Image (cartoon, rainbow, N blue to C red):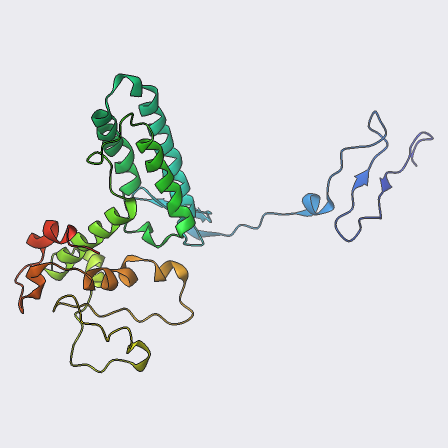
Length: 267
């Protein structure tokens, strides 16, 4: 039996639908800090599998080759991680900026900050614009360190840099120099004699910029937004808008030697 001074805990019933609070008179003031019932009864369900004597536990993210892959596949955790690291590096440059001129500041930014941001940029290119803008703001902060920003020192946008990297990677794939699984990303040339779908008749009515057009990737209506923004879906539109005179030739032996020239003839 309970003692004579025992008092049962008081249970609040007014919030029964949203999670009751248990109130105990044993605290100094007679009440304990409110704790939602849902928090008390919540359990973490994690799955694990065994490979021989090794137990493999489920993880919320996977880090491989410097890339952080989250379960949703939207690259939000990866961009958050590299943005945090890039801000720390930029902070170090900011603390010594009083000893550097504008040219040295931009050189340090490109070497220590932008190199961190652009690692694997073609892989996380499918991230949402809201995530990519976090990286753009870091470059804007670096430009703000310049005392007299000369137009020749201003770096190009990160998006244009990603497009240039995509063009160079495409040249390598078209020359058959892709390695491993990268070969599966090789785009196909569009057949001008093939009939065009009626849906894109208005879009293809304009004259193409050159003779080496790539075939657009078919995107089902229910495709993920991440796939619609990735390299494989974007590169046909970027490549088909190039205006380099060499692409007006009927036959091009190698595309890789034209990589630097194609960068300056983008959209």
